[in-house]
Amino acid sequence: MTEPQDIQGDDSLDEMDDLDLDAAIGAAENLVGEVDDGLGVDLDQVMNADSGDESLQGGPRRYDFNRPHNISRSFEHTLQAIGEAFAKTGTIDFTSLLRMTTTVEFKGLRQSTFAEYQAELPNPTCVSMVTMAPLKGTSLVYIDLGLCYVFLKKLMGGVADAEDTLREFTEIERGINAGLVSRFTEIFRKATAKRVEIEPGFLGLENNPTYVSGIAEGEMLIVMKFQVCLDTIEGPVELVFPLSAFTPVKDIFDPQDVVDLRNADELREDRRHVLKMIQGADCEVMVQLSEIDTTLEEIVNLKVGDIINLPQGVDAPLKVFIEGQPAWIGEAGRIGQNRAVKLRTKTAKE
Image 1: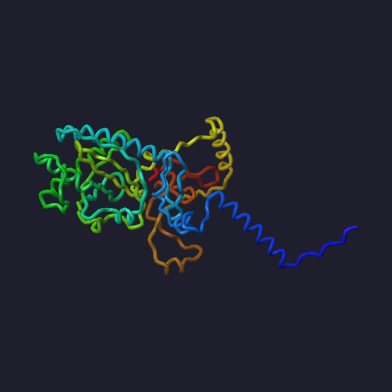
Image 2: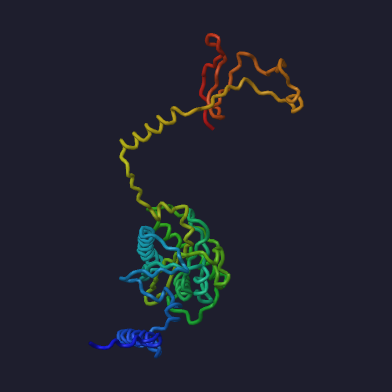
């Protein structure tokens, strides 16, 4: 018979736990590499990573809890269809206008707050504030500044070559670019014509991004991105809408399929039950003989036997109220020994 061994103390148990933990860490490091040698995963880098750094093509979407706003698949598909229609219409329109090969390509959607979007804009820039009724509030049209100068040169009969120095517009250039922005909004109107009739309006153009206004700093934006190519020169164009702008036309841009879970016979039976229940409910019917103007003192001094003179005759029509609401015009009469009112005309609802 073997002698029983001594039970290890608490220090020995702690030492065994440490060995097991070291073994687990070693196994993990063999799989993913060490985390403390500067070559592995940096926890701070992971926590502070920008959601825009991750590609969403072919994989799940990252949910940013700092930006909980999201759009439904149907809303996204509607905007994508409009974006593709905008690109096709824009390609044809600008090729005809400029008499040169012009392509407009839809590059997708992204979401951003107004403060973040404003901080990303270059200075100088070309951002126009526009309205898109029935969309609510102010929307933005961003055109790459270098692309603007190529448009300017071509519209004024020059050669469509790149501008060496980017600067703010002169007053004449500002007016021409306002017309260019109106051209883009008109193309957007055509792209949405099958769904809703948009009425674009021009509010103003800014070369300094800090002066862009009309949208709250924390407002969530939907950015429709396009790439415009004029022969060999290309640049981005963006249509920017506050998410709240689509509220008046939500049923058009974000249709929700409503499925009626009950058929027509079941709905008819439901109405029959409801009608049966309310038919037995108590209801107050009041007939008004007349109205008089008096004072509180006269009312207080009223006593049994007093006669109140009414300003209308005995044969005058009477108002009949149901639950306090005027419902009929009646005529006073008698049935046997009881007073009665005969209903003559139904009161029209206001």
